[in-house]
Length: 108
Image 1: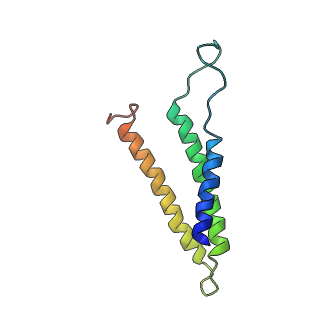
Image 2: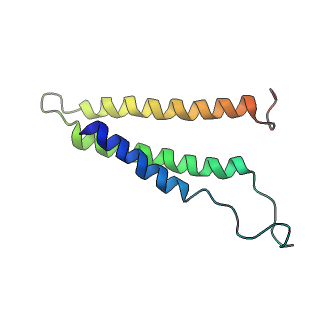
Image 3: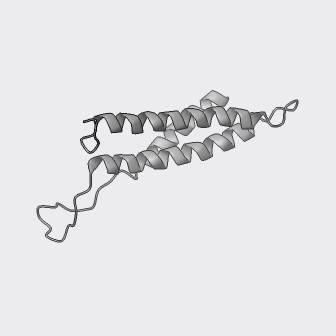
């Protein structure tokens, strides 16, 4: 049941993160008071950050609920730690890839 719930959490978190990926309303060329244009990558990263935070919270509750073992009552903390390491590593992959491929940073 645990793997199924984790993948269900992925679907919910991704769906919620999509709602945070949006720009200011209107067209910059038609609105003189539009302001500064947003970087598209910043818009995408906003949704990614929301998804990461929701994933960590959801993973904690899923681990606590379904991996609370009678012989080892603190086992859920170990499982949550492993899941958290995976989330942090995926975040680092994104940041490292951005550093080496985005035109705003030195290596490019």
